[in-house]
Length: 114
Image (cartoon, rainbow, N blue to C red; front, side):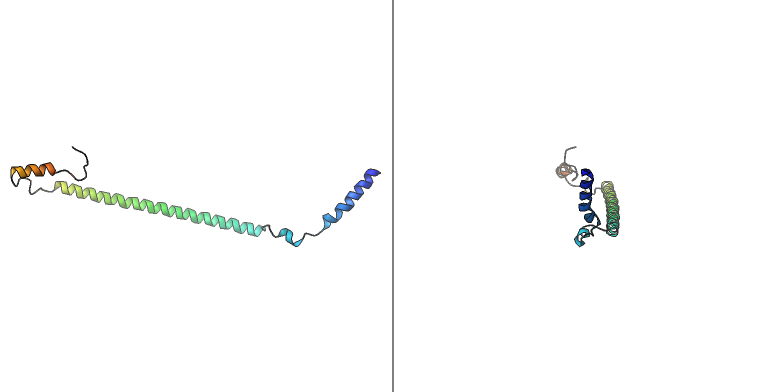
């Protein structure tokens, strides 16, 4: 009998709390499912944009590398033409002058001796 009266008292105290309405401030901090979906869609769009930016940067880097390699090819062609050109003053002048020219004839891109 004591157990039954205790159970009735507890249920009488808890029943009004179970049927009470939520206060107005209870839902203000939570996002609705629509807001969650909109946020997820926005994040996905941002990721797509970032991927597009990265792919464009990679394409630009490849184009720059190709352009630089073309420029290097042009410089190599110019060096080949210079080496094939006839040296007009090669056998002209005095022996002393020829020796001094030969001593000073080093290619500008060679920093160490032969």
